[in-house]
Amino acid sequence: MVLLQDFTQTDLTDFVTANYNVKPFVGKQIFDWLTKNADFDEMTNLPKALRDKLKADCVARSAVIVKTLTSAIDGTQKFLFRLFDGNVVEGVLMRYKYGNTLCVSSQVGCRMGCKFCASTLGGLVRNLSAGEILGEVLAVNALGKGADGGRYVTNIVMMGSGEPLDNFDNVTKFLHLVSSDDGINISLRNISLSTCGLAPRMRDLADMGLHVNLTLSLHNPDNEQRKQIMPVTNAYSVEEAVEACRYYFRQTGRRVIVEYTLIDGQNDTYAHALKLASLLRNMSVHVNVIALNPVKETGLKGTSEATLKRFIGYLTKLGISATRRRTMGQDIEGACGQLRKRFIEEGDIDDKGGANG
Image (cartoon, rainbow, N blue to C red):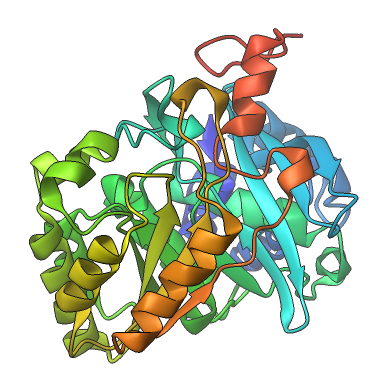
């Protein structure tokens, strides 16, 4: 099946004119419908015969919402998306004063092996295509004024299931699609991409001129300790990842964000703060200090509130910009991979990610 949301408007026009004997303007009509997340039956300005042919050969909606959970605490919404092959991924919509931020997934599962993340527990199933990542955005955008061609989703964070830079080609194509003037046109400056530290790909991203906000999931400044919770450190050291961040700033002028999740007794001491500050000194950076969102299988415990505040104080006194990142959606399994994992356990989807029924 051909995923139409994978196409740019130009490529879609070329595809339909070559395969369905239609005029070029039909390509734009279809593209406009796809941007509104319409299915083929809703494309009422197209002949029914054409819609039937497209339906037989193609997929209009790359990601379909099959489950929605809404937080009673802060209104955060978590979505389970079904992909064309039955696999499922998650997204989270967070509402702020400045707009609505959608956290999207880039892979079904993940192979990075971070010990605090539910996404990696079953390993990597497959990469998402550019159109499937875009499909997550368009599906949620259609819930609001996006159904009428407006923009309900104003910001995107690539911090859902998967390591975005492990799916580099599809993710960078997605960035082009989602920021295109022809489509939903979300500014790259309103998009954040989080990586566990794939240093060569961080440099590649910097060289592409896609000035998204880069976030490094660091979580420990000591290589040996970080290896215990983030196996990627065996391939790329903390120093390599941070130097790639410095390179990203030099190439793009965009300040880098460092994510630092506090784990009780493992990375929350003054010694850790001192080493982190030394690592980040003279760098355009901000540290988001995060309270651990627990996953029962990991056995990891979040630090106390007092320790979290004290750690931020350490960094501030050491000259590093640091604040606590607001935790949202705690009552709806807001952390990466938790909703998909629960659905697998309850038998709604199989252990390969496919939906049952």
